[in-house]
Amino acid sequence: MTEVYSLTENKSAYVIQDSIEGGYEVRHGICNADGTPKRYDSKSDMRKAAFEAGYFQGTDTPKVNHRIAEERAQQREGFKEQRHMVVRSR
Image (cartoon, rainbow, N blue to C red; front, side, top):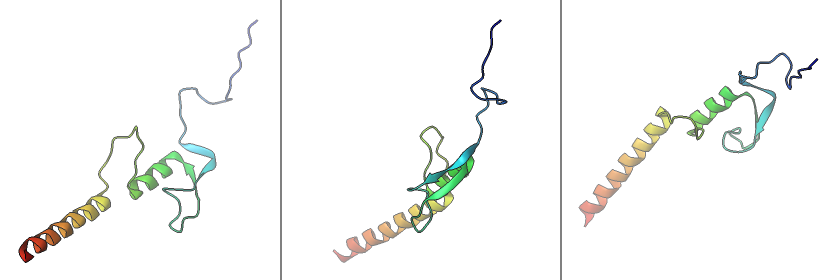
Protein backbone atom coordinates (compact mmCIF):
# COMPACT_ATOMS: atom_id res chain seq x y z
CA MET A 1 0.00 0.00 0.00
CA THR A 2 1.34 3.44 -0.94
CA GLU A 3 1.12 6.28 1.55
CA VAL A 4 0.73 9.83 0.27
CA TYR A 5 2.06 12.68 2.36
CA SER A 6 1.11 16.30 1.95
CA LEU A 7 3.54 19.10 2.68
CA THR A 8 0.70 21.34 3.78
CA GLU A 9 -2.28 19.86 5.49
CA ASN A 10 -5.80 20.92 4.52
CA LYS A 11 -4.56 23.35 1.85
CA SER A 12 -4.83 23.08 -1.89
CA ALA A 13 -1.58 23.13 -3.82
CA TYR A 14 -3.11 25.47 -6.42
CA VAL A 15 -4.36 28.23 -4.15
CA ILE A 16 -1.95 31.00 -3.24
CA GLN A 17 -3.10 32.70 -0.08
CA ASP A 18 -3.05 36.48 0.28
CA SER A 19 -2.34 36.47 4.00
CA ILE A 20 1.21 36.29 5.33
CA GLU A 21 1.37 34.06 8.38
CA GLY A 22 3.18 35.95 11.13
CA GLY A 23 3.31 39.09 9.00
CA TYR A 24 6.23 40.63 7.12
CA GLU A 25 8.23 43.56 8.46
CA VAL A 26 9.28 46.15 5.87
CA ARG A 27 12.24 48.32 6.81
CA HIS A 28 12.53 50.47 3.68
CA GLY A 29 10.43 51.89 0.85
CA ILE A 30 6.95 51.37 2.27
CA CYS A 31 7.79 51.61 5.98
CA ASN A 32 6.22 54.13 8.38
CA ALA A 33 6.60 57.84 7.63
CA ASP A 34 9.11 58.29 10.45
CA GLY A 35 11.32 55.51 9.02
CA THR A 36 10.43 52.81 11.52
CA PRO A 37 9.66 49.31 10.17
CA LYS A 38 6.05 48.51 9.33
CA ARG A 39 4.45 45.05 9.55
CA TYR A 40 2.10 43.85 6.82
CA ASP A 41 -0.20 40.86 7.25
CA SER A 42 -1.27 40.44 3.62
CA LYS A 43 0.23 40.79 0.17
CA SER A 44 -2.63 43.02 -0.97
CA ASP A 45 -1.92 45.48 1.88
CA MET A 46 1.73 45.65 0.81
CA ARG A 47 0.74 46.12 -2.84
CA LYS A 48 -1.68 48.94 -1.90
CA ALA A 49 0.94 50.71 0.26
CA ALA A 50 3.50 50.37 -2.53
CA PHE A 51 1.06 51.81 -5.08
CA GLU A 52 0.32 54.78 -2.85
CA ALA A 53 4.06 55.39 -2.46
CA GLY A 54 4.57 55.20 -6.24
CA TYR A 55 6.07 51.71 -6.45
CA PHE A 56 4.85 48.57 -8.20
CA GLN A 57 6.04 44.99 -8.44
CA GLY A 58 8.02 44.03 -11.52
CA THR A 59 5.38 41.55 -12.67
CA ASP A 60 2.44 43.93 -12.22
CA THR A 61 1.18 46.15 -15.00
CA PRO A 62 2.00 49.73 -13.95
CA LYS A 63 -1.11 51.71 -13.04
CA VAL A 64 -1.38 55.47 -12.94
CA ASN A 65 -1.06 56.84 -9.42
CA HIS A 66 -3.01 60.09 -9.76
CA ARG A 67 -1.29 61.79 -6.82
CA ILE A 68 2.17 61.21 -8.28
CA ALA A 69 1.02 62.09 -11.80
CA GLU A 70 -0.33 65.41 -10.50
CA GLU A 71 2.92 66.15 -8.63
CA ARG A 72 4.97 65.46 -11.76
CA ALA A 73 2.68 67.65 -13.87
CA GLN A 74 3.15 70.51 -11.40
CA GLN A 75 6.91 70.01 -11.53
CA ARG A 76 6.84 70.17 -15.34
CA GLU A 77 4.77 73.35 -15.25
CA GLY A 78 7.19 74.91 -12.77
CA PHE A 79 10.12 73.96 -15.00
CA LYS A 80 8.41 75.48 -18.06
CA GLU A 81 7.77 78.73 -16.18
CA GLN A 82 11.41 78.92 -15.08
CA ARG A 83 12.55 78.23 -18.62
CA HIS A 84 10.36 81.03 -20.03
CA MET A 85 11.71 83.44 -17.43
CA VAL A 86 15.31 82.62 -18.46
CA VAL A 87 14.50 83.09 -22.15
CA ARG A 88 12.80 86.47 -21.49
CA SER A 89 15.71 87.79 -19.45
CA ARG A 90 18.28 87.18 -22.20
